[in-house]
Amino acid sequence: MKPKSLRILPAILMLTFAILACNLPLKNRALTVPIRLNEDTLRLIMNRAIEVAAQSNPELTAVEIEVIDFIEPNIIGIQGQIPITLGQPLATSLKIAFTVADGVPVTEITELNTGGLPLSDAVVESMNQSLNAALVEQINSIEANATVKSIVVEEDVLVITVEVPLPGGD
Image 1 (tube, rainbow, N blue to C red):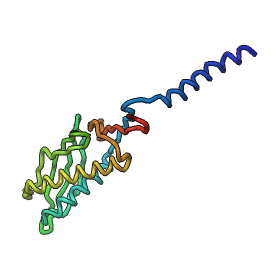
Image 2: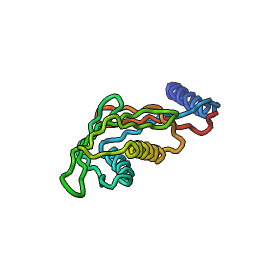
Image 3: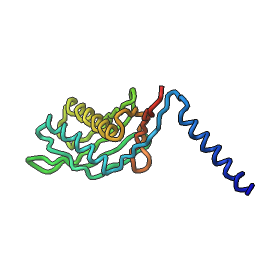
Image 4: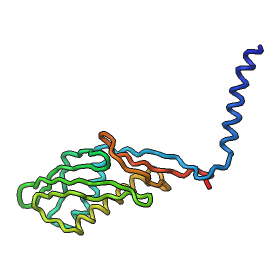
């Protein structure tokens, strides 16, 4: 009988310490969570951003995204075609860099080739803003109080690392 009671004692002690630890006041309690956006999710987010840009430019009806390249550390490349209402589709490509400022995602189109279709700076800025809004929406769908800590490319996904405050943090 003694050996069984000795085996139970450490388990009871560990359980007691775990219960006590849950009630200790801790400052800056937060959980770090990675949000992994694969090609399909990025395609949906990009299509939303492109729809907004298309509202500002009647020639730009949409972009048919064909390929998304993941370029470490924080860039995605997109290749596709822009269907033109009168004529052949135009080959297009762009690169988007992802950074974080004050806990929110920031996107910047660093390269843009529209196959000769003129896009104003305002349209490009509209695409950046729309993409930012779509990323924030994606993050908020998981946790509204999340703070973005980093955005990086890992193999074939864009990883957004967020910090979520835990209840009881001071």
